Image (cartoon, rainbow, N blue to C red; front, side, top):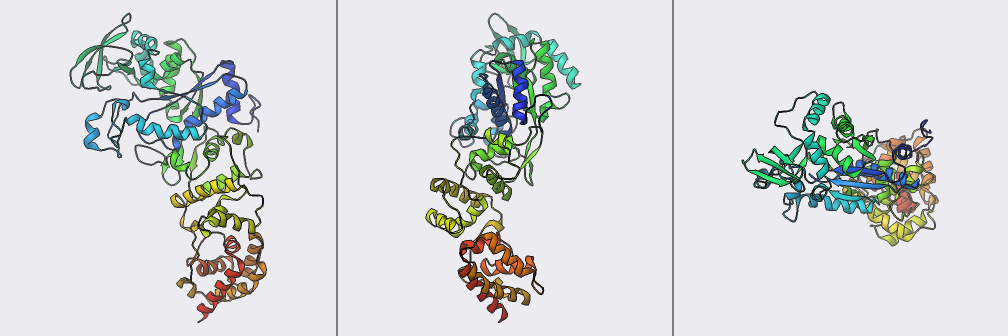
Length: 516
């Protein structure tokens, strides 16, 4: 339904209308993230929300910019489970951009950022990537830092009033980096010189005293850094997680600092919920509960990941399930007639030249397995099954993804390998199951070339007659005869692809073996 405020249907369009009321010409959308560990699907909500807003703004004629801040000045707060304690224990407190990569190759922040930026390129995200180390070193933050130092008492009062927690008398909005031990979390500010643009400090960890330029000499504390960036970068809108939006959180603090210290209105907020991982809760790099974006781009087209995030309103929690639900999501993007498809979300999800296949993804996974993922055999089987005018290139691309999904995320019931000889499980059937297979074996040859739906109707009807085993136990008998287990993919599709005549011979063999 349309939003009463703006008349727009999609959340990105509704937010864009409100953003343009603040800045109609050149709005700036800011997002940010700390490269403390592997970037996962949960991180996509921030950057894709910002990207969708930017696209919607540009569609309305605005020269919108998306700025992606990499908070690489943040200190390493602890030794995470994926780090070597012997190497990184002594480095706690240093900025991420000054640490070695976990594998010893290059810098820590770049180690995690590089694959994420590569994935963003494949996702079609057009953002200005701005590491905090470069932002501060450039001098663009000098004036807002000096303003914060001058308004230290006001900043402390704002934080105490918002959070209800008092700050120590030695508190400062500036976190100086020690030039000796390089820690950025142990500095005590002793004074500053506005004209020189320098800060005097003492390190609590090693005792070093120094006077350093603001540019490159540290960073603002988080609750001050955020609104200071809004001022320095003229930010119009900011998507951020629900943790910042909690009462007394950094948004409440930042909004007051923006108005009372920097003389500006805070950006238009777009608050988002977390992305959970099915069965494991919210994704967390520090807990190792992650699926990386790169991993998922090996199993689904980039448009599917974008659509997953952009279809839901940011304030709605969503859960990512890389199993069978992911296949259904691919089909929703692929099929124009798919139930519940959000066309506007799909428009905002375009990442390049998308090539729909016209074959359900789960079916392609099944056919691929039975054909050994040989493209020629797959296409031949699809055409025999009634799929026409196939785009060979699109099928080949999707087949690679299907194989990747099968190897990484497929549940056991989706894995299919028809036994070369009659499985032992097929020799243990009840009399009504044996009779069902024997009858079905006489019917199947007449269904050669029939669709899976037509075959399913016959399977179901025969299972449901008086004296029959019923659908559940009937299909169980089919799976035992073909796969050697009690469950599997849709039985009719399995028979259609393998061939009704071949299936009939196997079912007849199973009925005879079980009777003996």
